[in-house]
Length: 201
Image 1 (spheres, helix red, strand yellow):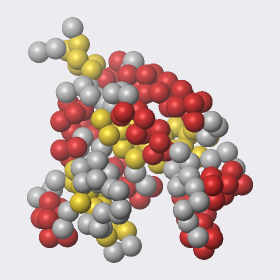
Image 2: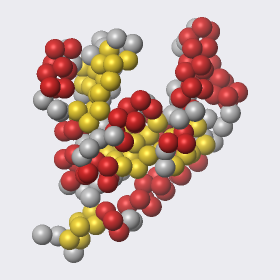
Image 3: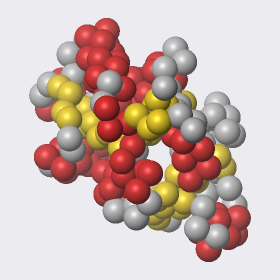
Image 4: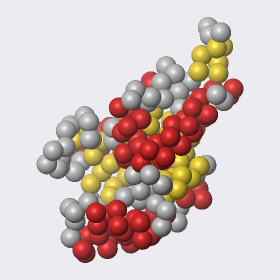
């Protein structure tokens, strides 16, 4: 008998691409564990500690950096963000798949991680909107942001989309159901890789 090691399904894409919806649904259906990131930014209204983020003080975050507890971490707009090894490695070793919703900067750091069990488990997907026009419609349709905020999000999204060639897979978004069907099919195919099997002790 053989034991399958878990997959780290790393998902990136611009705001409005639908990546977070895909990741959350996969976790909600029990197909994977959602890797909850840490941050030093204050919680926004409605956010729950341990679900949306692990909200840490800067002092606690920096202690964890010194103790080598992160797979990746970075400072963005004056706040620290990072992924704890404990959120990922134990699950992967036990054969549980982990989904990570992460930006392109974080993805670069995960790729550079020296630990072989993380590199071997990694499957990278970039989610793209079908067009800039559709992305703008999605961002505008949320009805939560002012025009200048939408323009900033568009500028950031276009820059972020230039990074898709670094990824193993690319999914061009269609409808929510089509996207999820293809997203789940990718995970199911990766589960069949012989390289993920190790003999039972």
